[in-house]
Image (cartoon, rainbow, N blue to C red):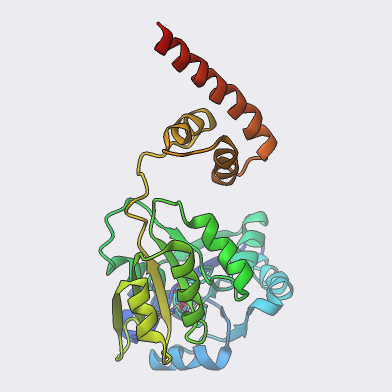
Length: 292
Ligand code: SAM
């Protein structure tokens, strides 16, 4: 019998994103041995468990009830029960519920152990052939066009590939907004990863848009390549950025202030004050260089 004063452990278990053979031995062992499995949809997860003859009880834990259910699960963990959290597919907490329970568990001193495994994000990245050292993952872009375009505008200058999950019914408008914001960049659209109809469309954004214009089915991951014309040496502190923008052909002080404020998430007034000094100091230095 467990010591009543010793809390149980919360396991965050990744499950397949299509191909059931992708489940790990450790995930199966954990799902078999915990007292309870929290999942988004009990009917959906029961199919996965019966495929592996696992009879551990299930309880639902989904986005709309996260706060409420987290409290109940924390009580059980504090009583000493071990609990596994899974989602419908892939890794919980990545565009899936989990964050509230994990945070509450940590705050209560409960051990949180990830059991890593499939994720559409990692699967797509691994097969994309990207050379950059990093990437930006945006989950699902906002459904509203205005918010989506605003997000894309904020990301346009990033020197990294941009990765998004997207639904089949929104992919066309998403690609249209990508094209109008980022221009003609290379992109990859992964569809139905690890499943029978797995496919990857690879080409300029306009070509992908053409290919999905009559509709597309299945689950999708979109990767937009970084702007190959974007300078890789863009600095990341205020003084250096000011000097860097100052050197860009045709750059005006007002525009630089606007861009730097967005780059560094600083108030424009603060950037403007610093810009006035740098711009004038540089002008004076170059004037005196020329006159000497
Ligand atoms: N937590 C999951 C993970 O780690 O991949 C993602 C959950 S999110 C609610 C579901 C989205 O992930 C789908 O709409 C799709 O964009 C992407 N996705 C999941 N499975 C996929 C697959 N087999 N192929 C392509 N994309 C997939």
